[in-house]
Length: 621
Image (tube, rainbow, N blue to C red; front, side, top):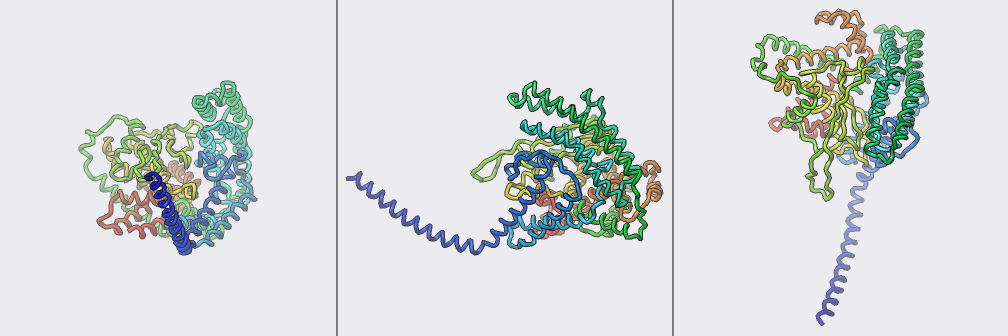
């Protein structure tokens, strides 16, 4: 009896539960209909916007295997699948297609109402709209870019990218060798562009072409290949060895030798002739090119000014006029000059002798920097347990940083150091390159590692990746290029790190910091005056002579700036924009201001232009 009653009660409960469930579903259906009706515009706007961003992301990466490999470890997660490996080939037709794509994206973007987007997407929409509009404006100036600059051209960048090409699967090795064999066809495309520049009267100077030719002739020799001393031989062998240790079943000794010999063959038959071709063709173009004389009142000079203005806007992220930037730089230079005079008249630091005088290793410095920055910068999550209340727990792997040294064949024209940006979905492994020819040591080594490592590029990049600004739903912000945001920050923390360095070195770091800032400010002013106002070499030598700089040294400075328009502004104007933003934050937040909060605001916003950052700050009260 009791057993039957239990069964009866069970079924009665089920019937009641079914009735309650039916009521709940009917209510839910009505509620969801009302909810969807009220929120459909916002929901659909976000869906449309994310879809457009994914399309742009895939379009930008699908046509370039090298860029794709450096951007994503697992492209399939982002809807990009394996294709035949190829380097992009420049042509006027491809340029026209690229320009048309930007116009199409802007039209699709304009069809989306930003007011209907989520807060995250609304900010991203503003950035993308300004970004594409600027790209569209720059596309009108077809022959002003310089992909073969002696100091930072693709003839230098490409070999470093090849040397750091990761082998995570055997197909990566095959793709690498295929891409390496395409070096010649890739350079043929760049030479076609250089021919367009020559025809337009915008070819590089004779001196720049001579430096480039000499650099390319010496880059790769048969002796360096046969001896195994060239970094494109040594790095390939090292990566093969590492891959074989990790996946011995995928790479036998016999296959190892086959790959090694194929790399040697490609270097001799494809890469070495490609560099000789650049040297010969650029020398020929330099001798035959008609270089336009650009009087300051000519239309051609005005056209160059317009291009430079847009380039400055792109590279710095600043929307100030050239006149405003000039006034800002002069004001900063005068303040630094007075500060430097005051520091030189002060007594020497009496505690200097008590500080460390022994050399610090690169590893020591990176460790000290991470400790010193703790109070002023938000921590990274990598290597720590997930403290969120999410049901899915995860732990990001700890950050690693390999220090590598630039090959002798590239050292003469390479920067003192640089950071190699990791893949978006595998950002825990990082690389910093140091140029042995730069003789970095002491305070200069310390502050350079702050610039490239912590709290500079490495820290900033990892922070952005951890924050999820770019995910599989909308990965586009992971590839939008904001040089000013990144380089301005790196310079900002580099100058800040002089205060940290004072704890370790017997040197007047305040004096060194001010001198370093003043030097960069002066170069930024020269950059502006050479490219926008037409300052000549002789005028530059006279000007720098007032600072005790010899004519030869002034010529070297002038040549570098002439070859790299807006480069110094990318660092220093962007740095000044950060200081301006910081002052705005102090006024806005008042007693709630702290450097920690400001740094967190800047980093949380992610790569941006400074106009958008200032607008975002006003909303962040």
